[in-house]
Structure formats: structure tokens, C-alpha cells
Image (tube, rainbow, N blue to C red):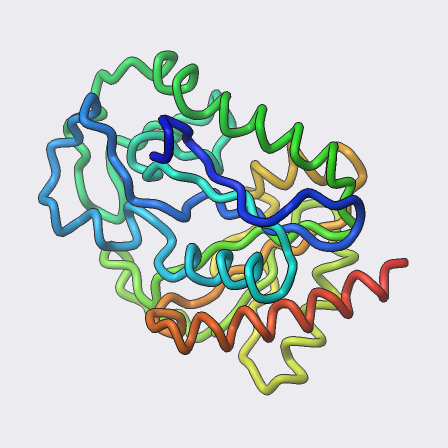
Length: 240
């Protein structure tokens, strides 16, 4: 973490326009948290959303879309879960046991990491009053525990408010992409951060999931950042 913060923000705060939120941008595990897993698992999708940090940083630095990025692994505390969700401190992920989280002090993790992240995000969004929030995630091409390939290249998730998603699905499709509509999982079941910070406040948002094998290199991340900035810029205009 940077200066002990569970998040970092890139780009100046301006009112209106677009902003980016990345709940799973880091695989950092503090020294005080012992997960009890093989170190190589921290480089996989169970620990972070691969490729997302690179895209979010490029959105902020090259496309003037400020970003709020997590600086803690989802295995320490999942910032994209409600506080009372049983997986907010996961004891397993994609078939891998997380023994250090069994019997963990969940309240302490919420107090140390989860709440400061969301309190800072709430203040940041209130100051920015954005036209559109980009909630950026990535998904593995194939779950170890399920064994089925995921064909979508990008997907849009939503819960009750699908207005921005509908525009984005069409525009990404016009790029020749295989676009998932609430796939590979439904935003009606997994939309915690946007439920709290967007839908609850009437803010427009696009919850974007990109398949991880498409965004592993810097060149790929730059290409996707440019495409996302273009598509979501047009979505924001369509919603005015």
C-alpha cells in the first residue's frame, strides 16, 4: 500500500465527465495478514483482476479519466462485497483454500481496509459528481473449478439500472467484439460497489469486465484503455 492507504487516486478531481473505479487492482498482502497460500497464487485471478491496474492508470494519465484504485488484494478483504457478505474475507477461491482466512477477525479487516476504501470513494465521487462511472474488472478465461471456457471478450454487468450498459453493449459490439450481457456472472448478484456508490445515488455507470488473456501486455492495456475511453465517452453523451 502507498503511505498505508488501501487505495490510490490518479488524476485531478474535476466535476462532471468520466471517472474509473477498480476494486481489485492490486495483489498486495500486508505483513500482518498471513494467508497461508502458495506465493504463486498471488499472481493469479484469485488475488487480483489481472490487467486492470494498467488500463486504469492509462485511462487516468492518457485519457483524462481520473481513477480510484484498490491497493489491497481481494484475498485480504474483498472490496467488491458488502460487509455482511460471507465472502468479504474469502476462505476459498476457485477451488483454492485460503487457510489464513479461516477464523479471521473479519471486523478488524473491515475496519482497517474495507471501510476506509469505501469512505474515500464516497467522498471522491461526491466531489467529482461524474456523468459516468467506469467500474473496471477482469475475468479469467477459464475457472479451474468449473472447467468451461468463457468466450466473451468484454462484458457489461448491471443490477437494476441498465441504461448505460445497453449503450455500451451495442458500441463494443460495433467494434467486432463478443460482448457479454451480464456474463460470465450477473450484476444482479454481484454489483456491490456500484449498488452502493452509483445506483443508490442515481449515478450512471458502466461495470466493465474484460477477459484477462486480452490485457496482459502494456500494448493490449493501452489499446483497451483507448477503446474504453471512446466507447464510454459516447455512452455518457447518449445519456445526457
